[in-house]
Length: 343
Ligand code: EPU
Image 1 (tube, protein in one colour):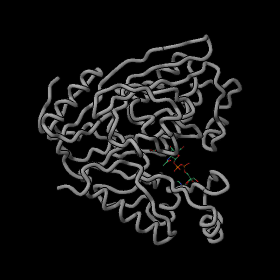
Image 2 (tube, rainbow, N blue to C red):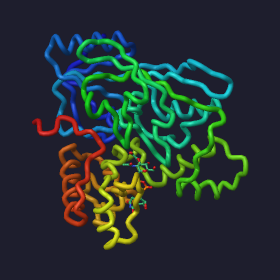
Image 3 (cartoon, rainbow, N blue to C red):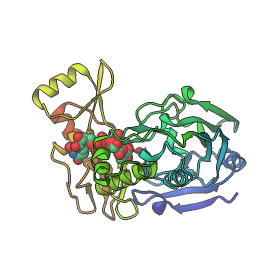
Image 4 (tube, rainbow, N blue to C red):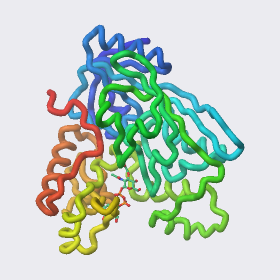
């Protein structure tokens, strides 16, 4: 295990903002992680787990040990000819794994194609897109406890996966490192094409016997048309979560804005589209030179080149204030804020 000092993280972050780690180590095996944890403990260093770097905004350099997950491996742990369980190491790239599963004829992940990030992060915030969430295919995960180094298996219930939420973002925040995830895949899983944009895409393909791969291709096409490619324009996908509001508050808004997109969750709460709230507050395409709001999706903040984390956060704060003033809704960032308030 080789700990490096003063490592530039910029190219490892999809936002491409400047940020250094005072200490940095790459790990492949569970025991590498335990060694890195001991190093951090002995040197009194805070730790930060880095996967695909796709859901973080660094406000400052990080004083502590960045542990970069580089573990690799995709193993079939059970297979009855139709359904199978696949165990994947945390450092695998999410989209590459989705493509690999499709190439093998395994269904279940097609709607989640092209989401940036790594496998270890997928349950952390229960990634979701186009009518499917990670929890729909989740079997179990294994994680290492930071305090003790012990390995534990968590089942679906224990992970408490909700909308962009898990136990690892709430009660157990900062306590465990996810090292591998098992998924339930199915060669004959039904295609989920009811999400409006997919239906439109697929009707264009005009194919009767659609495959999982066709659905993935449609998703990739939609994502490419709406979301900027982080290799070209720095971004971290949706910067904000879609807010969940009480039915009574929603009814008041609907009376004024009958066209407001809404997704009832149960009889009590309704999910609204943060993108619509931001867009109709006048922010879509907002340009501050080095950074701004994406022209096709107001939920995405972009670093056109040269922006700092602090500048992007100042823009996020302006957007949150403006949406609060117009709709009385407090948006919450979906992206993790790192070293916020430090200098
Ligand atoms: N909308 C606007 N203007 C915008 C953006 C959206 O009016 O600038 C409207 C759309 O017309 C639509 C509604 O808002 O009526 C919802 O938009 P969309 O279907 O594009 O989805 P979203 O709610 O904006 C969520 C996820 C995305 C995911 C898409 C597709 C969150 C925070 N975001 O976006 O996830 O790809 O649904 O399922 O839940 C991500 O998490 O990084 C991400 C990209």
